[in-house]
Amino acid sequence: MSQATHPDASPRRTIAAWRWITATALLGAATGAAIWSSRELLPRDGELCRGVLVGGAEAPPGASAESVAEAAAQRALARRVTFTWSGERLVEASLADLGGTVDTRALGAHLAAVGHEAGLFARIDAALEARRGHTDFPVHVAFPIEPLAEKLERLKDEHDTPPLSAKLDLVHHTASEHTPGRYLDVYAAAEALDRALARGVTGSITVPAFEIAPHASREAVLAVDTAQVVSRFETRFSEGQIGRAGNIRRAASGMDGVVLMPGETVSFNANVGARSLDNGFALAPEIYKGELRDGVGGGTCQVSGTLHAAAFFGGLDIVERINHSRPSGYIHLGLDATVVFPTVDLKLRNPYDFPVVIHAVVDRGTLAFEILGREKPAKVDYETVTVGTASFKRKVEEDAGVKEGAVVVKQKGIRGVSVRKTRTIHLAMGRDRVEVSTDVYPPTFEILKVAPGTDPDSLPPLPGPDEASPAEAKAGPRTAAN
Image 1 (tube, rainbow, N blue to C red):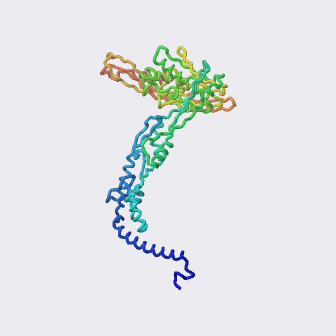
Image 2 (spheres, rainbow, N blue to C red):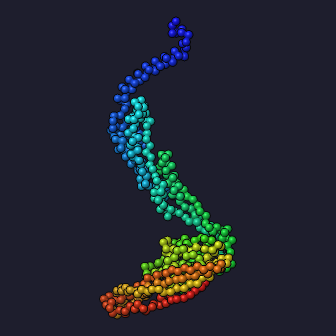
């Protein structure tokens, strides 16, 4: 009986046998063709496979994987990106300038592997794909978030807008509108750039911003209880000095009606603004490097000093304050406060569990600040003691306009003084808090103008180390209470 008619044979087993024979024949033919075609398709040792793309650009023939990876990295890092916010261009820089990096070693390894690794058929398939332009290695630019955020941090200094609290008009008992602060989110900007690069997109990146509402909203300000005067302090100024008097009014208006919610800190500079002509200030004498000169905003420090004293005797926390470089004629040593926009500030904090309001009154040569609230929570005692002095030196300026033998005092000399201050805050609940600090006022040069050729030895002698100046006398032991 033949195989075709054998009772155990089946059509399915016969077909399987023929498939095996056919596959074996085809595999032999394919192997022979592959061996022949590999000579044309596969790259030689040390060479890149033809047609390989890197970031969309074909690798040049004969180049090494390392050089191609380096060139691709340079092209990628040279791309520029622009950060915008509210339609304004904030910064434009290359990815390299922003701290981007490319792992050229890993990129080069991927390039070198095409057509060189795995089995023969896999290598041929990879080479064919490369020839067809289907093998394109993206150039990934990495950005560590922290360094990039630090590079963008300077944008915050230029564009962040702090919240603006509402102010209370104590005369009409109305309140201004409050404005939320807007802050650039540099971390979100860095992440947005990273996502854009992952999609292969560069160009313009919008910097996200977030808003923070002020502590003192209009509704909260209108509800503040101002029944009690927590503290009050006043100083005098000359109405005849037009520029200085105007500056005092302008600066005082910036602080009038400011509300401090419980635990809130207020900045003098943030509320008064830049001392500039555009901001309503005028030229007037001011202290600069220990000498008097004309400057825009002269007189503003009398406002900050008077406010500091009122806050000091009201038991408020003095968060930031610097004394003058010389004694001030309008206030006792230890109570003054110098301000320079935007670097030197006066900052006060409300330590109480109820809001307080700063009220400024300027009337006929008197500047007064009141701290108002629902109750008088503390009594404050204050004592100062002079703990050190330093003699002043003399500067002599020759001036052809001065007659021979004459001496013109351009600036009086003031001895340096160190003052130890003690503030005792007697809280209504029965606890006392004692604060001790020291203010140092450097000596102020005496400046004399003389005729050319004047012998310095002919000038009046400087005062001895034990001779007190008139300004120093204000720093003697005293006790004050609000």
